[in-house]
Amino acid sequence: MSDAVYQKCINPDCASTYGVGESLFACPGCGDLLDAVYDWDKLFVPDGLAWFEKRWATRANKLDFSGVWRFRELIPFCSEEHCVTVGEGQTLLQQNDPVGEYAGLSAGRLHLEYEGLNPSGSFKDNGMAGAFTHARMVGAKHVLCASTGNTSASVALYAHACALKCSVFIGSGRIAYGKLSQALDFGAHTIQIIGDFDDCMRQVKRVCGDLNLYLMNSLNPFRLEGQKAIMFRVLEGLRWQVPDWVIVPGGNLGNSSAFGKAFAELKHLGLIERVPRLAVINATGANTLFDLYENKGVRFNGGQVDNAVVDGYYQKLNETGYRPHTLATAIEISRPVNLKKCLRALEVCNGVVREVTDEEIVDAKAVVGRFGLGCEPASGASVAGLKKLRQEGVVGPDETVVCILTGHQLKDPNITVNYHKDKQGPYSNVPVEVENDISAIIKALGL
Ligand code: F0G
Image (tube, rainbow, N blue to C red; front, side, top):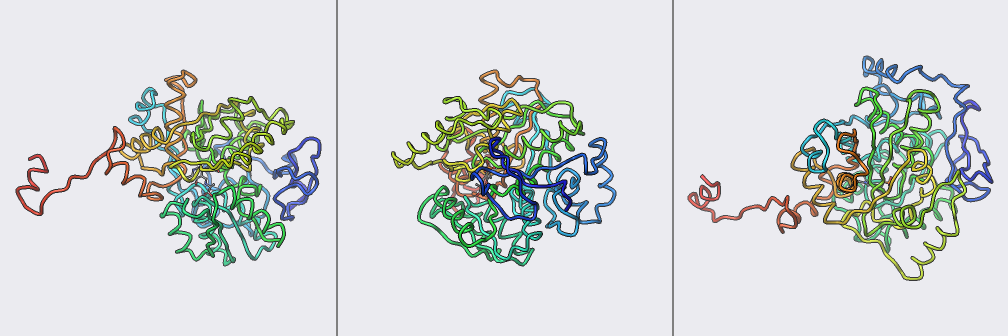
C-alpha cells in the first residue's frame, strides 16, 4: 500500500509511526496501543454514504457481498487481492418494539443489530476479516489468540479458510460449550490454561512477542478496522441516519474502541454531521471500565490518561487476588486491553458506562429471546443497560437507540435452559413434564 496508511502509537508523547506491513501489537517505543491511521487526502473517499449502495447491485463479487469489504474505501489499509472474506456481515438491523417497550422506549425507537448472523455466530468475524487480511499481507503462518470463546471460534474458522496454523488459549472451565465446540470442530489447536481470560491474554502476548507469531486479539489494530464495519452497517440499516445512542457490552473493549474510531473518521470525512452517544455496559462482576470511568473519573484526556490511577487499580486487583465473575462469560474480563482506546471512544461519543447484574442480563436476554432473534448472555447486557439508562432518564423515551447483540443465542445454551427450567426470572418459560399418557398430555395442553 501507499504511504497514505501507517500505524501510529496512540500516546501523544510518543506518537511513533510504523509501516502497515509490520506485525506489531504494541508500540515498540513505549508499549502503548497502535492505531491504523489514514492520510485521507491521498485516498479515494466517496462523497456520501449512499455511494455504498451501488455495491448491492454487484454482490456476485465476494468483496461487494462482504459486510466488511463492501465498505473497503473506509478501511483502506490493504489492496483488494489481500482481502480475506468468508461472507461475514450479512447481519440484520431489526426494529423491535416489544424489546423497546421492555426497556422503556417509545414505539419505533429501538433497533437491534444482530451480529449473531455472522458465519461463526458473533461479531468477531468482522474483525477477523480485517486481521486475517493483514496476516496475509505480512505472510503470517501461525496465528494465536486468547479468548473467552467467540474469538477462538472466529479465529479457528478464518484460519481454516486461509489454511493457517492456529492455536487458541482459553481459561479452563470459563468457556460456553457452543463456542468450545466450534474451536474444536474447526480444528484449532486448543490450549486450556488453568486460569482466566486475563491470564490467557498475558500469556498469548508473551508467546507472540517471544516467538514472533501473529496475534489475533483486538490489540491488533486491523481487527478493529474490520469491526468499524458494524457501525457502517448500522448506518446503512438506518438509511444513513445517525442514531442518538449506540449501546454495546464491554469486555476487552475492542468493539467500543472500533465504533468510536469509525464515527470519528466519518465525521472527519464529512460523511456524517454528528456522532451518536455511546454507552458501554459492563457486568457487575467484571466492571473495571465502569469503576475507572464512572467512579474514579478516569478520562482519555487527549491521550493523557491518568496512568497512576489505572495502574493502582490493577495493582489492587493483584494484591487482593481479585477474579472477575459473571454468567456472561464472554465479558468476564478485568484487565481490558483496549481500555485507552475505549476511553477515547467515550470522549469522541460523549459516552457513558454502566454495570448490570447477572439477573438483569439474563432477564433482558430472555426478553430478546421471546421477542427478537435471541442472543447470548453478554449481548443481553446491552438491552439491560438501555433499561437502566432509561430508568435514570439518561436516554429519553423518543431517542433512537441501537443495541448491539454481539453473539448468537446458541452459543451458550446451558444458561438459557437453566434460566427457563429453574424458573430463574419473570420471563422463564418452564417446560412441563407429563406421563407418557394421552389424557395427561391433553390436560397439559390446557385443552
Ligand atoms: N459480546 C460477546 C458475545 C463477546 O464474545 C465479547 C468478547 C464481547 C461482547 C465483548 O467485546 O471485547 O470488544 O468489549 N469476547 C472476547 C472473546 C473477549 O475472547 O471472545 P469487546
